Structures are given as C-alpha cells and as structure tokens.
Length: 368
Ligand SMILES: [Fe+2]
Ligand SMILES: [Fe+2]
Image (cartoon, rainbow, N blue to C red):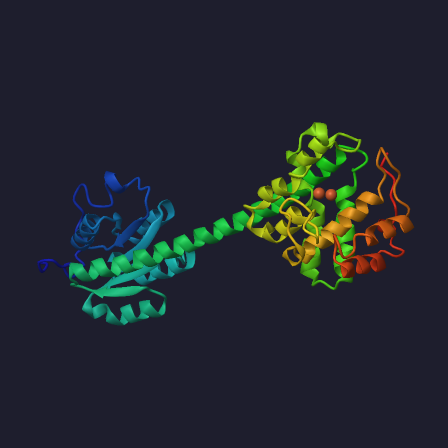
C-alpha cells in the first residue's frame, strides 16, 4: 500500500496493466508537445507517477518494458525519461540510460530506485543520469525533480533553436550580400557608360585602403562598400538612370536620394552595418556642401571618403556620352583641386601616389 501523497515502493510483481493504462491509451498517444516518459515494470508505480505528472500539466508516456520505452523514444519528442532501475525479465534501467545518453544526449534521464538498488543509482549518476529518486518518494519531490529536468531540457532546446536561427540568418545574410552585388551589377549595366562603374570603384577603393594601411578585414569591407555604394539607385526612376545626358536640376534632386535609399536597404542587415557610412555618405563633403546629410569635416568617416575618392576618380576617367574620359594629368589636377575643401588632402595625396602605374586607374573607355 502506498503512503498518502507518495509513490509506492516497487513491488516487482510485474502486475498486468488493466485496460486504459496511462501511456497505452488515446489522449496522449498523439502528442504534439514534448512528453515525460515513465518506465517501470510495476503497473502501480508507473500509473501513479504518470497520473500525478499528468495532473501537473505534463504530457506523459508510459512503458513497462525497454522495448516499449524504445518505441516511445523513436516516435515522440521526449523531454525527460523517468525510469525504474530493476525491470522484469532481467531488463535494467541502466541499459536504457546508456541507450538514451548515446542516441539522445539532450534528453535527461532520472532513475527511480528501491533502497536495495542504491549502488545502481550511484552507478547511474556516474553514467550520466540527471538525478535519482528512492522509492517511496513524496509527490513533492517528484514534482520538483521533473520540473528541474524539464526546465533544463527546455533551455537546451531553446538555445539549440537560437543557434539554428543564428546560423540560418548568417546564411541568409550571405545570400543577401550576393544578391546585392548582382543588383549593383544590373544597375550599372543599364547604361554601357556605367557598366563597370561599381566594380572599378571597388577596385580603386581597395587600392586606396591598402595604401592607407587599413587592416585586411577593413580593406575587404571597403572594397564591398565600393561595390555597393550606389545600390540605392535601384530606387531611382529608370528615366533618370537611363538618361545619358547631364541631369536637369530636378532630375539631380531625385538622383540625390540614392544614398538614403541604399542605406535603408541594408540597414536591417546586421552584418552590413559597417557598410552603411560608405553607402549613405559617399557624396558628403568636407566643407558641408555634400548630400544627403550635409555632414561637416570630421563627422564624415574616413571610409566614406575612401569610396568618395574612388567614385570621383572613376567618374572623371570614364567616357560619358557628353564628354571624353579625362586624361590622367587632367584627372589628377581635377581631383587635387578638391583636396582640403571637399576631400581631406592627405587622402587625395595617398590616392594619387597609389594609382601611379596602376592599369585600373587609367582613363577607361565605355564597354561596347
Ligand atoms: Fe553615388
Ligand atoms: Fe557612384
């Protein structure tokens, strides 16, 4: 006879379960939520434990043998296993413990032992059991032990899910980066006069960043910033983008939106935060007359100036329908004229030194 409010000691009588045993029957057969698996060959124990845990709000599966337990483990999402040590027919809960630790290392196993099983309980702890309860045990002890194990398991599942989400997001962000690079190529290809603009800006920005002795990972970021600096042109009407002539004042006002459009595009992407200053501020100017924010001097990050110089040089040394590419000497003089007013002089000097004899910096014809 069990004590009131407690689980009875194991009888090991192996009494046959009556019809409708907890775990054998319908309501918790098709579990959608994770469950506690109760394994005991003694029907009285497993029924009492199962019904108690059910009343506590858990989904419960019950098994009287190791093969039933294995079937539940294979078919259901189990949170915690609560198993007797000495089972009928020479079966042992320690075998189940070993199997679960091997096949489902994230499931905690708690042992239910009789007093004469104590040496097995110690062995179970050595083999990775989460805890053990000695029969007869009060319901309160069972409730607390299962709650601890379930909470621990939920935390493990949650942290595994979070790391999966993190991996997925990293993969998505990588895909998004590739997508944006393709988009930049498409935008440039709209006109044969700008077909190689962003890739040349990227190469020139990399050259300057190397000459300025940026760290290797910064150089990669700056090269990518150059590649994507005009990505916001996706939000500019084709009629303006496709216009091969100089822009009217009204058209230019629309075109001036592209740094903000580009910044808005990448702002939600965690891994692209470092690119935002180059995309938003590559048309800012030392004297405060740039756009879109009219920043002044030291408010403009140096990497934005790196892209600005590369962008400026690429534009003046490229063919446009309304003008030839500037010859090298004239382009150098034109850029130098911006030094100290629009662009920090030392950046201009470093750039002009860095591009000497570099083919990518030479005036370029439009692609056919
Ligand atoms: Fe731009
Ligand atoms: Fe540009």
